[in-house]
Image (tube, rainbow, N blue to C red; front, side, top):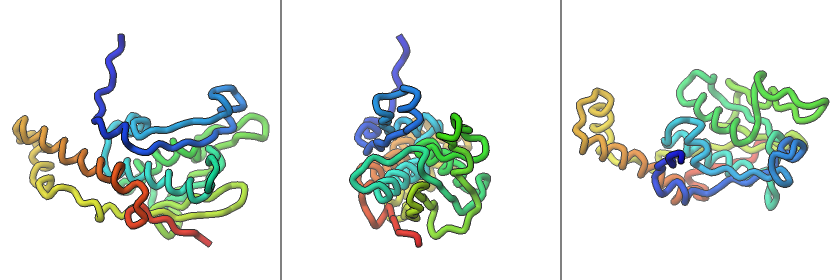
Length: 207
């Protein structure tokens, strides 16, 4: 029997992202192509849980809800533009999470079947956008820009001392445990307390 992932309990309380992937439907990967993504999915993709991963997850959720009000978003039907190059700051991490959820990919994406389901060139870096990411529907051209105001959900001030101690290998087991708890507590507050907070997850229409 394979061991189960021992994720923090709050991961299960995070909101889910439900959408439809026409490619999954076409190939019979899921009933009607409906896919449900959970925070645990992007944690496994990134290999860790942090405010950046949580922010990219919530930004994508908010953007898709704005672009497809009252309907399932179409995976593979959204173009995404990011303002920074992939190698700069946390842009690569955010782009990977957004790409995973939306299906938008760069030149290495799925090339399609016949003339359908092409996912290439739907994700671009270093584009002048008014926010941390711009999402656009491929069918209608409607666009939204999304930004996460993580400073409105600050971390515990003790993290400033604990982080360098943990990085240097100088922390006691108790300090390391406290660091992990405090680190994930900020993620918890983002996901369970501010997922629908317009002051934290800011969505703006883009002309």
